[in-house]
Length: 137
Length: 185
Image (cartoon, rainbow over the protein chains, first blue to last red):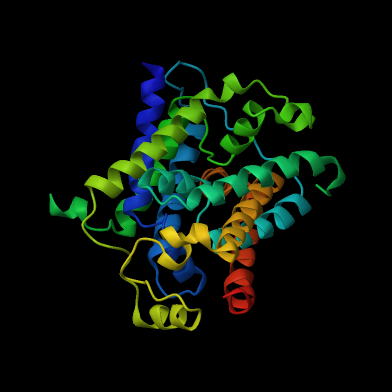
């Protein structure tokens, strides 16, 4: 039952990503050219509502479906890892036209060259694991 | 019901992404797509090469199931819920793409030049796609999250690191599109 629940959430999210065109290379290119409000509207409205909802969850101490307090861990304080890692991510996001969520969407949609991108992402993740201790964080 | 088949406007899509975040929080989980890449490396045996991958992947099974769902969602949306060939871009964007040699705007969901069947027979395209993925995979783990984990969930939780990461995402994207694309394409 639980397994089906998670698959269904993912299916819903995947449909939203495809139908919003957030999974389209063209929309990412358009966003970085400031040619349309579309992507800014998607991210902006998601963050705006996410912010309100997350603060309500925290202030009202809303419990999860299992009856546990919802605990959202804070990110570790640092600058370099977020700035450098973020810029590297952004370079790839614009080149491949896809961040991780849309990569899975496009695999399902049948754009097979996306598997080259996914192979690259797995390799990049692995390389990070190998170099982690040598990088400034 | 025709609206379902049309591209969804931002004011429908954005709130539905926020809803995805809330459902996962209510389920006692978090919203983060790139951590699945780490779990997949762990399953592939990366734990032998780095302690970073020595995690119990079964703790992350729920997120892998979400990922499987996202793949299914992509299949359903592209096969049954779409009647338009691709994003309806403005003339100025189409003109800029033209200078890069990308002329499939408006005809396809993704540029045919990069994601068409010929991609597999062009070493340059294979290289570009692989490097794009490499940067996303490396960068998201270095930054500790991607668009979902930082830009949506992290900023919603008022995390300064997530704001720094998101600004980084944009700096990287702008550098790629404005400085590197004219050289690459």
